[in-house]
Image (cartoon, rainbow, N blue to C red):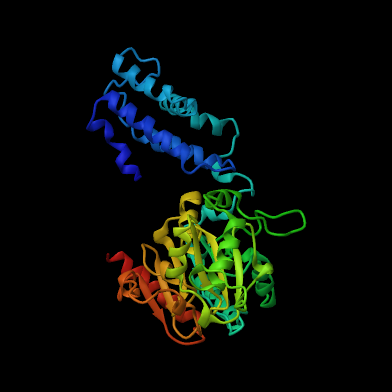
Length: 424
């Protein structure tokens, strides 16, 4: 909900209606999303947004007391109280008390308390970034191993962003990949790139989100974002899904066929709590994503199947998980403006590649960097085409030619999409 919609509601409705509306908004904020980890900034923003919605409340003589005298006001409160949601009422009381005491914030600073922006390092630096450079290049060889040229492209992107020293101070980096976290960190270390240079790592095709340098265990290993894990855990049945997938991929039309040799093998190294990974021995026998998704949902299994790493892997992740969904999560959780995200893609990629092209973010397509993608395993005959979801031309999309783009070429593409977005 946009902030401007809440600011002026008192100009178009009666006080009782305003209060009922704000009560409903507060209830929605508490139910979705509901983070496991407390962030002081989250509560502050919720109160401030509701506080702004009652501007000039003193001039209108609105008395929004919980113990109001009007029967209509009490009736609206009884509806909420009957539902047993006392937490909603507590939040409304806090908001109203803050409205009545506008001078409480300055007193906190006088007492020596630091503002919430200076909270300790347990919160990712991602929430302070104004821009986010997202690298989602699917550069893999025929065996599915990451190619070394990806390291060179990442280093050139770093150089391009740092050409503008003033903008680089408020710019963060995120890496989106189908590899698990351990393999991703190892691959970056082979090119002398530390994982801490990225504000976020989205691994295993969007099923895990990490914040290097912030969420780490005692032995130095990365610790996944618990809020994202609980968010994508909706209707995720891992064990039952494994059995169904094995039957569907090894027998035609889901029938048992014990005599046929299996063309898939479980990739145990890439498995995680929210990602089931398989090695594809023969891509010609693999089911298309459209067909597989349909058969899984007919069996009541809600998940997101995809092929990745040059069609050598198939990964099953929760329905709410993908690399594109992870970017939306960063927007909701840390308030990163999607319009200030710059996504670097190749000409092709994994089967979730198309989801990251269109949108309000800026896209830079690097031609010649990705050799082979997995799109041939995406659609069945008669399905929708790529042009149906991806516009052929967009001012928010820039193209960089060449297998080894330089920092200057990348910086030029970034300026191009910036200038095009200003004219929209």
